[in-house]
Amino acid sequence: MEEKILLSETERNWAMLCHLSAFAGFFFPFGAIIGPLICWLSKKDESTWVNSNGRASLNFQLSFLLYIVLTIPLCFIIIGIPIIVVLGTLKVICIIIASVKAAKGENFRYPLVIPFIQ
Image 1 (tube, rainbow, N blue to C red):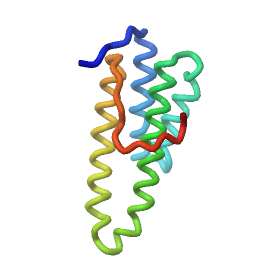
Image 2 (image 1 turned 180 degrees about the vertical axis):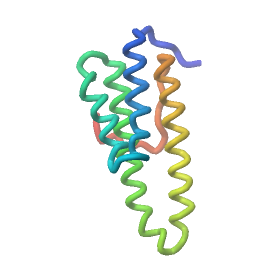
Image 3 (image 1 turned 45 degrees about the horizontal axis):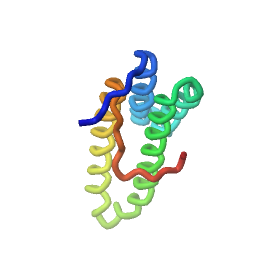
Image 4 (image 1 turned 90 degrees about the vertical axis):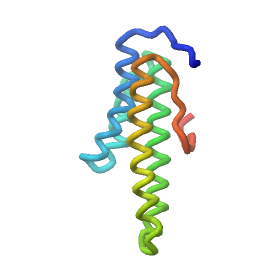
């Protein structure tokens, strides 16, 4: 069982927002990166919890952007289409799980993440 960290409600809400802001990518170009980036940059110096969750969210979004870009050429031979569907589904599920865990003060490690931001 994972250990909960004692955090203020504000810290937990900002950490959750770092993850949920990635859904902006469904409405705006590069919103999945810009949303977490704005949340992370605005509060990273005030809370280590928000800093770690913001970095995790941003690294996940950057990794998935790379995976999608690399998969697009595979769409010409049909195999890329199911891969993109699986990646999109995994992305939505992981964002929701990470958001809920951040709101509860629990750690969550995204799968398939390349640590661009340390």
